[in-house]
Length: 214
Ligand SMILES: Nc1ncnc2c1ncn2[C@@H]1O[C@H](COP(=O)(O)OP(=O)(O)O)[C@@H](O)[C@H]1O
Ligand SMILES: [Mg+2]
Image 1 (cartoon, rainbow, N blue to C red):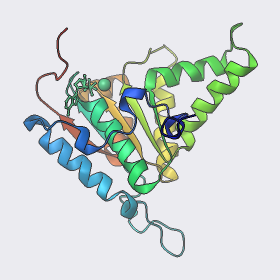
Image 2 (tube, helix red, strand yellow):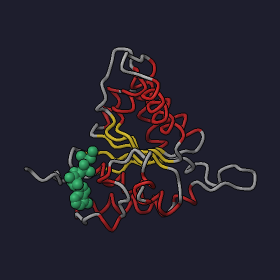
Image 3 (cartoon, protein in one colour):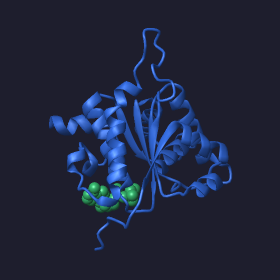
Image 4 (tube, rainbow, N blue to C red):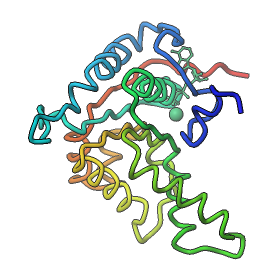
């Protein structure tokens, strides 16, 4: 296999987002602030995750912090978040994984309730993908709030489990979402929203959609 391709297999990144760097992004005035703050985060990533001789974080209030990219559709959240993920991997050698949150939830559901189509190979593929979300050093969960919401609150509980579990062991999570602050509280919960503010820097993306009409 071509080494560049092999490098990204298992990362969950769709081919068009693999290996993006900040210089690949076109500068849009409306995104200047978001871009600047994302670059600062990537520059400071190693220092943020640094441990002292006792293996305790040197900066406990920063350790394990991720980013939440919030804003309306088409403002470039997924692109900027995926670029940050690729840059962290390229610059700092961190293991990374990306998935749409709805796909992750579908996989967790399928593992819990396998149907006839779930043969052993499928199950091991699903388990690998789900494990990466808990174990990769940095994870990008794309499009929070687009997953199917059930009466049991499964997707909402899982998000809390992932974010708290990862934060406790100092693994940053990057999120993108179209939800506004009050949508978050309604859909998830007020405690989860306030926890997200603790474990993620909020980067608000503004402006008109960059998506070019067909
Ligand atoms: N910095 C940028 N320069 C040029 N095009 C961009 C940039 N950021 C995003 N785009 C394009 O704009 C569209 C929407 O971006 P996307 O990241 O999917 O937005 P969102 O996740 O906020 O809906 C995509 O086609 C993407 O390729
Ligand atoms: Mg998106």
